[in-house]
Image (cartoon, rainbow, N blue to C red; front, side, top):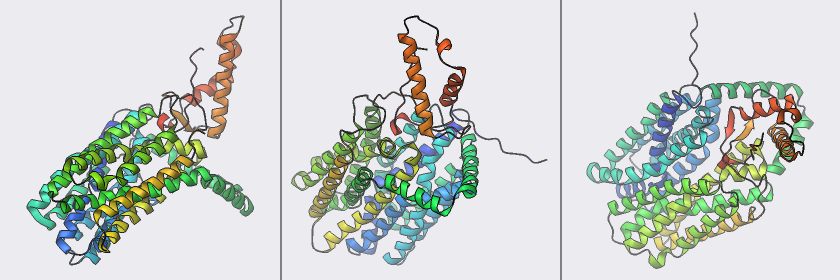
Length: 501
């Protein structure tokens, strides 16, 4: 007798264990994203190479970190999220252990840059997606809890790993990094298959079979052109470029800031503490900006562009106040508050500019541009310093890049917010797995129902709702509300819900 595994139901039981696992994974990611300057110091001290040559390793690492999402999705769709997480954890752990024994920096490009970078990217994508597969009604809350681990991890692990480096040296640091990232496999084993994940995989397979049967070459070309015109419209292209230039500057800072702090006379532990301050501020800002974006009178584009503008200006002026530790603390607070907040807005902006059905594709393209920026930024900083420039100059260049990114952000759609202007905490339907209707048809139908309900309220005869609304509309409305695959209100157009009937 074949025994089928029990699928995890959303918002209950094992889903909370999965949330804990995702939170723990994000804590590990927080160190390798926000406090990576500690690792740069370790490589510089051990290999005694110039800054540019050393920056290559972590530049490749960060670039693959942000662009390996499609590989993780491919593995998850073929097998499961659990398999993708375990494979990623093994890769990154093996890469870190190999880095501890590499004879020169050239080999580190492969062990740390390629092997660990691929593994980290797979783990990062998987631990984000798994929350959506295990939560439905409480998805907003669950996502907030999971991603808050990034800031907490940077806050707790940055000074701890620096103390480990001081005590155990280069080899001890990287072996412990290998042990730390091996915990991705432990967390991944807890990602049991869920009902929502299983349903979505079945839906994807059915859609693929249907498209193979009815789609011809000319239809495919027309569909490609139409999608291209949406995905690379002028507003969206401005979003892509804003993320590219902004993250180019941000990760130049993250990789080289610890080296700057030690160059002006402070200790490595002082630098690590600054990284931890940035991490906890990053955690706070994601929650605050996400909450602010839900306000009815708040334009997401203003928040998106405004945070980059303030961060860019603060960074350009940093050489004038950054020589003191107080000035460095001020800057790291600013960096933490304004850097991570854009990720709380990207889903919403993507939906407003391209529609719900293009959300995944737009987000993927955005992450691709982000990954290219994170790859170029650290190398650009290393090139400036190795060519005779100073860390002050490289930080100022990072600030100029952020300002350029903010200009593109302002051009993406400030003052022209599309979609439904009234925002509430309701969740938005991505698609209903039980019917073949598109998300736009669902939205139009739901708006029609709300309009009919409004007429009921103003009806002078005071008739009951059920006398006016057809049973079909009521059924469709109920189906729409119960759809299992939904995105948070902070991640898209919000649907106004009437309570009169």
